[in-house]
Length: 182
Image (cartoon, rainbow, N blue to C red; front, side):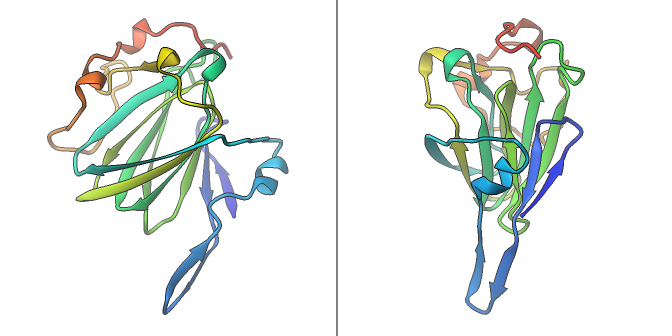
């Protein structure tokens, strides 16, 4: 398993070793020891899976307060553009984002710690997206930033975005609370 830093220090891309043969493939998608050796101590309490069709955008989501979540994300089927936005006030990368393609072909994962908003767009006809969370879902603590916020200027690589009504009601980046301080 190889861990690469991104342009935002705490967001990591994980490339597992994939063992392929004529039957298919095998890989480890998480090995706690690898993270512990990098002083990243994780305890996952919830796994989520979503299935989405092409041009769907989910996000930009995060949870605040005692239910802030870190996420370890991967794609089981299809391709997505995965995005993590730094929302830690005082961070040198506040308002910047990392975007990476996750797919069933590259098998990459992305680690997104608390203090980041997260979203993805579906690039293939369909995608099955899996993520492990370090905290439980809490409706009262969930927050969202509008996916097409002009300050962030994210290119989601979709033609006509399919976005939930709930995500269309999200706040502008300039209006987020100071839930995370660097």
